[in-house]
Image (tube, rainbow, N blue to C red; front, side):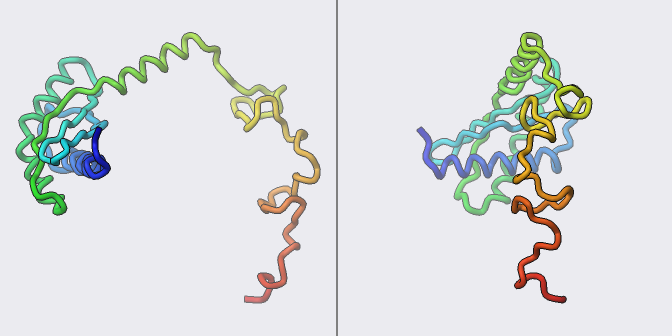
Length: 170
């Protein structure tokens, strides 16, 4: 179990590493990477950096190798940017397959579940869904229907219903 401070520092380290990768690293091996999580040790001296890489297995290995070779630069920048830490954490990069797993699950669900789309007979325009399945504009009770285009929060209010305190001349 990690402490609240370790979690907070881990999130801050994650944001800074992403910023460093985007702006400072010029290694062509590092492709499209996302830092999914950073787990800090209780003494905040070590950080396990979970990295998700988009691409084939060779690109993933190359991206991890690029990050490992740039570990010194990243660690130096972290030490410079994070003034609240006494020590710059030692970084250990790990491949995180969770994003690929969720994409695969989404693809499988698309195959199994039928597509949901609104049609004209459901009251919406073609290709446009509504807040409630089967709801149409005629389903709104007249008391809740306000003036068209008024955008007022009060049911039945119109543009002329301005309270006296706000209705004064500018």
